[in-house]
Amino acid sequence: MAKLYASCAAMVAVQIGYGGSNILMKIASEKDLNPFVFVVYRHFIAFLLLAPFAYFIDRNKPASLTIPTAIKIFLLAILGSTIHLNLFYVGIGYTSPTVASAFSNVIPSLTFVMAVLFRLEKVNIRSAGGGAKVLGTILCIGGSLIFTLWKGPYVTKAIFKEPLIDIYKNHDSGNSSGKDWIKGSAFILISDIAWSIWLILQAFVTRKYPAQLTMTVLICFFATAQSGFLALIFARDPQKWKLQWDARLLTIVYSGIVISGVGYFLQTWCISRNGPVFTSMFSPLMLIFVAIFSAFVFSERLHVGSLVGAFFIVLGLYLVLWGKKADHVVAAEPQEKDKVFVDTEMQNTSVNHSQVKDSVT
Image (tube, one colour):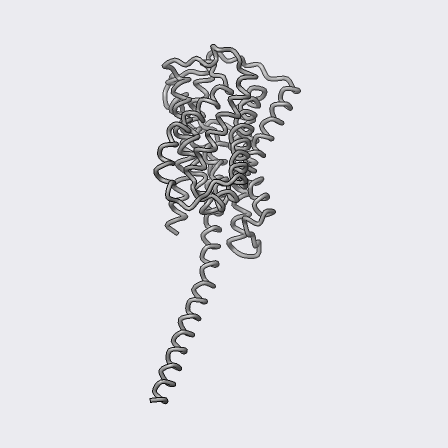
């Protein structure tokens, strides 16, 4: 159970990191940070940071980088970084962060279905653990949708009379056209599907290539090259690549170290220990952390829908984790019985051997 608790702590830390990245991205977008350039820079920083650690930590691990494995890692970079991130930010440009958050909540359900189809997750609805995982997934997704789509009346006052950072004063309140909304929603949905496939593919690759830190470095390297190719097409203006000591540089460095570096590694580590469904179930927690950060930084107020949605998210996550724990206990029981059987058999063999020896003597 210590392994499960360590994985839980790691994934909560990852979602806190993602929440901080979203807040910084809100600020940096007001400074005209180009999303294509942002994706390139953050993965390049993560590559430079993790490469020395990967060399010294993973050099003695029995992991050989074969051509098929390298191709799979290349695909991981395409799915989890190049497609997922670039389409996600393009989709936000056509819609809004609220719409993006609503669509992102389908990631746990998509991952759950894919994991069952690929036999990475065993679900027996008749058992307590299996039923808890199914019900918890439904509650977690439903809670995140309530959190995003239902506001209701305010239940809290603003922490500060004036926001520490005002990102809305220059915003255009006009709505996007219906065609743009459909286009942006399609981009975000494809982005989320790519991320779910990334989680599933990670589970297969980590079985063949256990050097997880080196894998993270290779993903960042491939993602830098792939996203760089896209940026040279869609962000050819040299001014978009220039960096200054401002919120844009802070966002790039933070996201490169915390998200593309540490975050990718921790998620890969958790997938290798608990599977892709476990990792995806923590995604809705980011909504709660973003709401908390926004209350302090942007002086945003919480709605009834936020509290109700947060309750169902936490309840659903608890049920899934309880179901995981129950499955571990059930899986361990046959092993204990086999061990007892083997020990008893060895004792009987030893007694019979002693009897034969005494009779010969």
